[in-house]
Length: 495
Image (cartoon, rainbow, N blue to C red; front, side):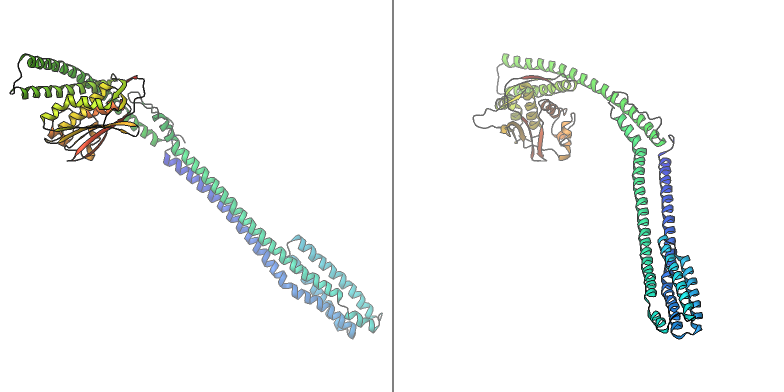
């Protein structure tokens, strides 16, 4: 049976179950039918007995009446008639006895017959004595009027009729109880059989699935996947073969992706490092140029342009470098006390030049006498704020507004960056956090790699926070996150 298919197994189980149930049903039907036939036969015989009883009682009365007539008239014809009636009574009594099947009824009926025989014999002796003149006329009339014995016999026969009817009703009730018992037995067997079949079918169908589930629970990407069921049904073995091929393909693809990811991280880190070195040289050259040459009105815009672009490129390079560190697990956090107000003010002082160059208004939304201490890595949070501010500047049209703010919210400190820019469509709000993804509208507005938001979310997740977004296309976006208040102490966490 191990090599049978699931269909064959289920067919065998169902066929066996139906066969057993059909057999039990047949036995139940035959048993009930036989009981009904027996009850019907008993009822028919009992009905004949009950039908014959009135006539049989009349026969007894006739025997007594013919004897009384002889006693009063002395006519021998009545003796002949009495003898014929007694013989007819005995014949009827014997015929009825054949129809009586209950032992107690048969005993009672035989007792009635014996009593009549004794009565008839005693009456015959008395009549012979009367025919020889052994009794006077007054005695004969008195005896003819005495019907106590006959009445007693008739009452006993009537009682037998009631007893016979009670026995017939008891048999009917017993037959009905037997039928109900048989039905309940078959029903119980059916229910037990159904549960057994359900359990067996469940085992046949679900056992291979459970074994497969136990094997797949131990699967890990990058490690060999165990898939083996030599004694399973053919359908499951075919499924396993397909899953094994898929597992091998997935593992191979995973290994290729892992190698590609490792190369990407190495390339990004290498390019970012060299990019930062080149930017450092440019930044130094620009600083020396400003120091050695007098600043003029004509040169000022160019210096601002150089400073803004150097800052933007430096931010991009830092993002790429830190993204590589996060993916490789080499990015560490130094949790300290960070004043959210000071953090945002410092960011504005460093980055406001980017907004000024694009003719954007920069606002700080902070509570009066602001001091909102929170727990975080100051350098990492500065990078997050810089990314969010730079992102807002990129995607806000000239004349728009970029607002940075902080507030106490639900026992934590909420930091946000809002703009009046192009906004983000609902279907793209999660994609922009995946890394190296940019919305179509964003591609039209500004250049970039699409890593700033992904890096910011990863840094905040390392803090135990989440970068959230509310946005409406054409009306701007609001990025915000919440940090726990600083409670003293510090920690060095590896992201």
